[in-house]
Image 1 (tube, rainbow, N blue to C red):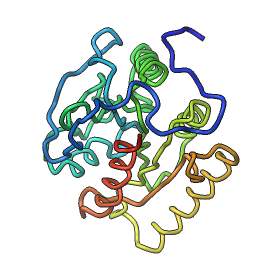
Image 2: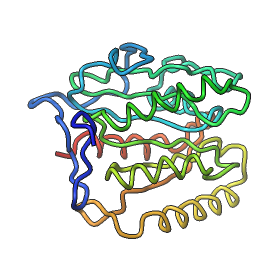
Image 3: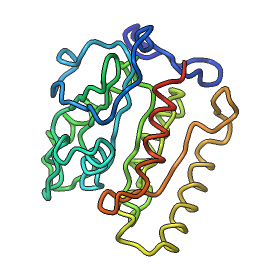
Length: 233
């Protein structure tokens, strides 16, 4: 493997791998989230230090809406009724050394093949080479559950020992009972995917929850998960 690529450790996941957050840095502040830059290639990414958590998911799964609800900013991440509009990797600062990252959506059939290939290469470059990556939020429309593309991303997380949190969005579209049943199905799928790889605290690399940007439900749980990743050393 190229020396510039993230090295997959031989043991269990150790939180805080990579360059780590700056010593003495303040805790991240979601309320102070601010746009840093957009990039279409690795050369234009911010300096690979501190800690990042990335959001990824199928187009139109509600990724941008989730980021906006989490940060309580109506238009921090661009939302669109037209899937496939996010064509760059967007970086948002949360204070010294902490960032959220909005990766391009995948799986939209009407996007030209060349664009799909560009997105795949861009996302792959980010995931493989970003040492400051602390965790991945995989955004999934709760009405669709896990797709093969979602499972491919989870498989990469498993191989790289990067924790992933499946965010089942648009829960307001389903009844409480149906949402709960879908969550149980996803938890079962995650358990089947992750049968042996665990963090050093004995927990699975994978977690999941129900979320609704419209009803503002699940925000506290999501924030707690992100802060756990950010503050682990």
